[in-house]
Length: 141
Length: 100
Image 1 (tube, each protein chain N blue to C red):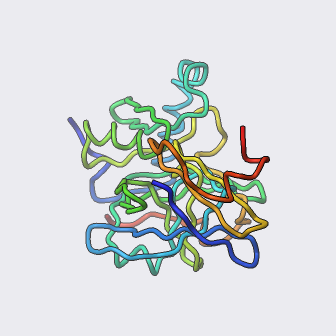
Image 2 (image 1 turned 90 degrees about the vertical axis):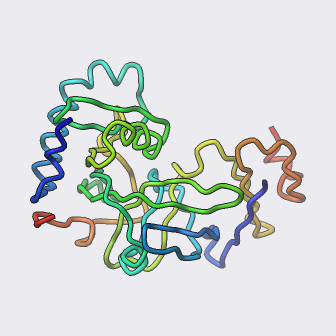
């Protein structure tokens, strides 16, 4: 399946997903952050009502080079044809949900910033059928 | 199996130190074979599980220890994850030491 999202005025990529925990689920737009190597980062106000399960600890290296330890939770995301588990960190003073590149393992991401569109090809999808995005010579192998 | 790290108090700093000490013992055998992959570590049982993603490592670990907490890392990397869009922030430097 081909998944689509939107590109905003700042050229940020947003994807619609549903995040679920033990107590509930919520439809959200996640910011696809290619500078984030993890899976998901959730603001506290979104994470708490979902009832995410604590699964461990991970270390995070931030842009200033500092490293901090954070609790890591397990969440379920419904995205495209798949419902899958991901790990998620929870932060207190953020507003946006960040989706990191580990979620895209096995996927193909094609971005056309000129046309303000992008597509994500799920694993196992044969013919992308993504219109102009795949017609770009720069995106052909 | 013993799941004692689930008992009443959880100290993130102590848990991380013990997990990293365990990793230092095994990194010589992991890094040549699994560099860039993710590992879920359990220092108590001295076990680890490898995956292409953190969730893949977690799923393997949970099959053997459904309720344990694990320490996650990217093999051969100084931190589990990088976040280039965030600079140092108080919310990312919590002090966890609480009754669980």
